[in-house]
Length: 359
Image (tube, rainbow, N blue to C red; front, top):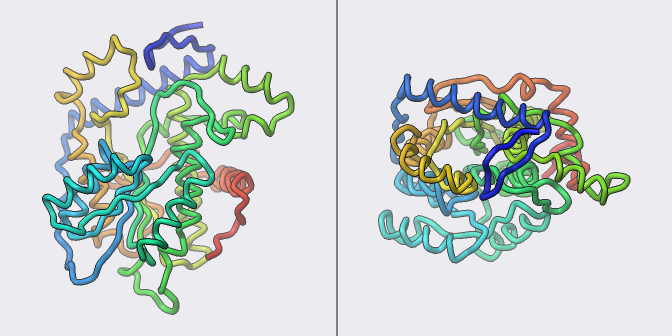
C-alpha cells in the first residue's frame, strides 16, 4: 500500500487506488503547465437588454467559481438564483450582488444535491416565488477530496457531482421549456452549462462505486470493503467523468426529444478555490502561498462559464466543451454512446425516472 495526504489524515490506498491518485495529480499537473504556458485571456461578455427578466440558476453559488459566476451574470443583466445548501450563506451572497448591481438582481434558493428530495425543495421554492421559467442553469456545485461518506446510499463525490445534477436537471426541465410550445428559434433555446474538469480524462467508471451500497448482496460487508479501498482522488476523477458522460447523454436525449434546450460543458482550468480545503493540513500553507500565484483565479474561471451561458457563438450547437471560450475534447469514454446509454439508464432507474425525457 502507499499513502497520500488528504483531509487531515493519511489515506492508505490499495494499488489500484494509488494509480487513480497518481493519474489525477499527473493530469492536473500537465493541465496546470499548459495553463501557465498559454495564459489565454478571459472571453468578453456583453451586457444584455434587461427589458425581459431572465432567470439563471447557479448551483453551489456561495463560494468559489459559483459565486463569481453569479456576480458576473448579474453584471451582464441576468437575474441570478443563488443555489445554496444553507439559505443564510445564500442571502449573504445575494446582499453583496444586490449592493453592486441593484435590488432584485439576485435571490437565494435552497438546492441540496446530496439527497433525492433536495430538488423538491427547490421546486417548491420556485412555485412560491412565481418562477415559471428559466433561461439557463449552471451546474457548478461540487465536492472534492472528501472522506468516504454516503448519501442516499451513494458515495458522496458521485452522488453530489454527477447524480445530483442529473436529478436536478431532469426535474426542472419543465421550467426550462415552459411556454415554449410551437416553433422555437435557435437563439431562444435555454442552456444547461456544466462546470466540468480536466480530471475526467483520468477517471474510471467501476460499477461498484456507482451503485447504491444497500442494493448489493451483503451490503454491510460490501460497504466496509469499499471504505477500506476508498481513494478520494480517484473518487473525484470518477465523478467528473460520470458528470461528463451524463452531460453528453443529456445533450443527445434533448435532441431526440426535440426540446428547446442546449447543453454545454466548461473546463474552468486549475483554479484556486475553497475546494482545496480538504487537503492535508501540511499542504494547506503551500497551497495558500502558491495557489494565488500559479492557479487560475475563480474570477477568471467564472468568465469562461458565463461566456458559455450568454455567447451567441453557441446558438444552434449542443454537446460542446470549452475552456475560456476555446473548443476542447471531452474524455474518450464520454464520447462513447454505449457508455452514455449504460450510465444514463442506471441513473434513470435509481432515480425512478423514465429513460426518455418527458415534461
